Image 1: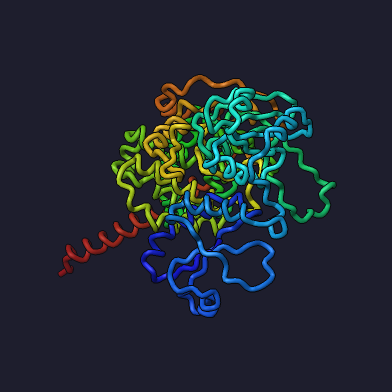
Image 2: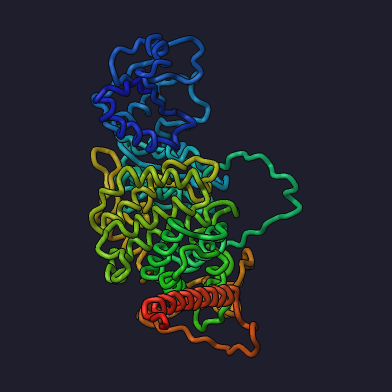
Length: 585
């Protein structure tokens, strides 16, 4: 389906968001039908638009698969150009194909006969079979069939409701309904909350072993020599894991920022503000919070305009042996783990970190009092923006984030709007990266939260999926709030000795860690002054490079001060002698 449009056409400009929404909505249908657009205002396209006899904008044309001879296509014949209407005419167009020109990947869209469905009940081919019961005018069944087109280990059929006795045999009392036959032979009706296409599709995509078909990637050389075993950790998608946030912090502080040998100017200011936001807002275990607060206080009181990052690393690695501070020194993904090591991981944890900060800024605005960031609803977003622009290792990603920020971040006027702004942009990024080679087939990039996590967040208006943003806001505050943070799998402080150390890579699985106590008054507890455990027995022993560098700085500063004072008094003394000198007679 091609839209011929003109970039100067006001109607085309107004319709562009709907067309983009359509393209994203039917992305999974690409093996059967694709959506495209051509700008006839571009000089290089003039001849093409003339050849296809385009006189008005926008003009929609369908082109059948395997067309050998030139054709100007078939004009769109819908009553309107609403997304639901265009989507349904796409299905009609597919069904109008003959067997000879039908796309081979397109599954059967016609309703199945009752006898065919009965034969499926006793089949054992290791796949799920979903049977959608609907009336003759419904498109839900065909839409779900196409939504599941790129997924394996599942087959979707549709059956019409003409035979009441047949429906009663399956226990179907309302339509549309979905009857699911599991690979082990068990079967029954499924409850998806709302009988809508998005709910049926989301439920079926989330079934165990139902996954997107893997893309064929070039083999890596010497793959057998260094096999990397990924230990899978079972997790609850509705929970926020401290292990993910702490692993992300470890990567931020010990890897990404450590790529900079020294920090000064805008880079140093960005680091200070980012650490301030983390220290004041990030929920979590008391030792991690105390480390962030210690780092924040040290940076705030630092008189230097340039610092070597090794000095920051010494504090993060607790070279001073301060009691009660700790940050895991390895990566352990839980909610952010991927089916392969290169999938998800750090970027997932960074998004979770950012969402948590915006939520905490909205629910605990007093935490930023006295930091210079208070009373500004954009403060956390702007700090995140500067961090991504300055330090995030993926340059292309940071440029995309900066473009989104320039476009609409200034429109944020309240803390709740800041929470929703980040959520919208995260979904926008997911939409852009869906189908990319970086997408984990086990965790496809779909609009979030999914209907199973937040049914109240999803609605349909005129057949088009719509978000209930009030419900989304409530969900985000619950999901990223401190009360939803669990310590399952989080590393115990004893695992790394003296409260952290240099990176050690991925830690082997140690099983479940005991959950910590609820968050409670961790903010107040973590504000106690640090206590140094060990004394220094000999000169130089126990001092870190940070200690030594500060000693050198203070020594040089005091020497300069004494020299300046010496010369100052010498000059004043000479002037006094000249002024009061009386010549001898």
